[in-house]
Image (tube, rainbow over all chains, first blue to last red; front, side):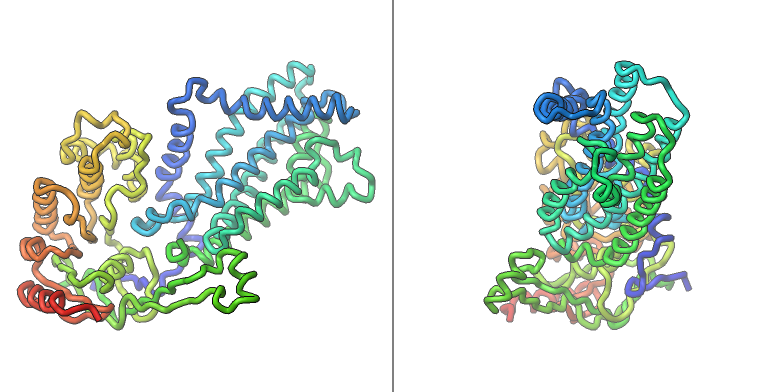
Length: 272
Length: 252
């Protein structure tokens, strides 16, 4: 008698998902490459477009805050860039992940593969774009503002890794959530536009009144962005609470994302 | 004979949602108007199906539209979960599905890029794909079109490349859903040759089709489904006769 499994009692588990992701790593790679190729194929400027978008954003905010709102932050463009690039990485990952599952309906109904790959590929695609921009802009800023290299800068990959974990967790939640409630897309849009002003991107945390500072630091993206600012702009080791919050948010979001996704995974193909 | 697939009292229920409550608007309006509330209708796509399919059998699955043929295939493929009963599938078996050809193709990508993307959707590694690639190209007969974006392919070429990938995946259990319904006579001949070849190599094949001719030419057993129930399980001639009777009676 051959070893047989019962389709009725098969349940996705963390173990089977990790095994699936490893087995399907080629698919993960291909999905990310496909999105990158599709994005740049046929356009004259190609990947330079990925630099134009943040440039325009930074330009607009720089003008508004330097000449109209008269910010007191020295080297405002450098400060702004440290917040706005990782913010954009999160925002575009979150927005795209809402469609990761529901826009792949026919695929999910005809081929079996670990569906978690779809939102994860979305995050990695956006990570690739973010890294392209940071690799160009960060050294440029360090040169222009004559920032000498310093020890805390070595921590950048660690906080980037934590932000990726956090973003993957949120992407899993959003991808699964949208399959059940299409309104997630619209609610997310509103939430992100509020969150932008509750995250110290266009203003430094130090400028916030003492009473509000704690609240601002607690918003989901703040610990990551404050960490980048402390590492590169203030050239100091990140504060203990920044470490703590970034770690808790990263592991917490990933844990919640994986748990929720696994709980609904086998119902996804019937929700589309 | 070693079993490849065993179903015991297998049933599958779907929920048909009218006024999906997936939208907040529906929930809100539903507070005031009963008619705008989400109505969920139960639909049993399969009811109490029991059967056993041995390794190396080629089984035709026939029935009218909505009889549960595709649902049965999707349950075997693991795309949906059975509602009640048991469905045993050999754990080590690689399952190849040709449920929809060319799903996951991207028009902007070339034929070659699509082959690599599609093969990885079916779980192949890069080196495995490189091994089958020449075979896929030869089988499709599209040697000169592999660098062309697939959006410029005719629908026939689209199907050829989809089937060429599926045919080269080398699964142990092959699930085919209505793939011969599309395509010209040439393509259908090629499909039948491929399935016959799979059969000769001892693969287990589940073949959903409306074509009595195709079923007769490749199957050694027929299942007739109607309204989710297994009406008949036996010889090809008996099954096709039963299906012909069924098709002649109006749908209730």
